[in-house]
Image (cartoon, rainbow, N blue to C red; front, side, top):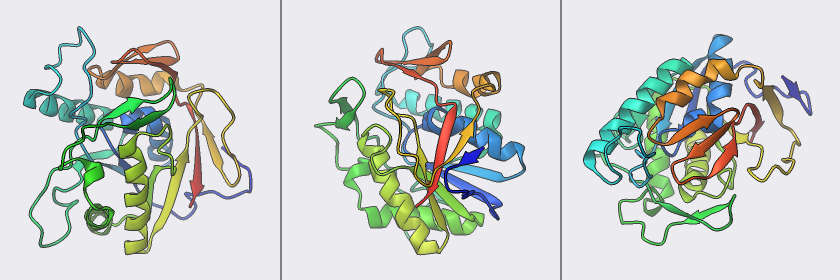
Length: 256
């Protein structure tokens, strides 16, 4: 690990919560980092906002069809398998205890959908419903996540950078939710600085980089767990919609 300014975002940290938008994000965006942290003895849990209800299904994966209630349960099981492979606790879903603010009935945040604005940048879907994650108030969702951070005794919450990595509206929303939940609980917030999908160099100011490019084999069980969402081809993944991207095996983290 090298840090451009000598800052280790995990110094003095023992319990870390990763806040993600959909099943598979934890592995694709931060799986290599989660494995590193659990290997060095940190406790890690993952809170996921939605079940990826609007995601497509990889042909031939054996998963239920897109949009079916059975797919939700299938992706919950995939997430649980991936987390075991990463050494993380979960799955926990935002809106359900213990990730629900005290005194409120459970609620379910749904996938907001997206569209590709360019081959590497996503934008909001045009038909997100009233129960979509992006339709909920940041304040309510942040209170839910804060409830989990408190109950789990977290020292740090980690989520996406402000643009969500590639513009997905649920990722962008989770950035704000995680940031505000950290403020509510008085713990630190760190953002993941991923290498852009178009290959341009990322902003590295104040970023600690964790290089796991030689540990792909360790990550494969978690990657293969999400067979309904993508396939692995060498050091790339091919998403259900056909988009190809390099695996994130070098991950940056910056205290925000």
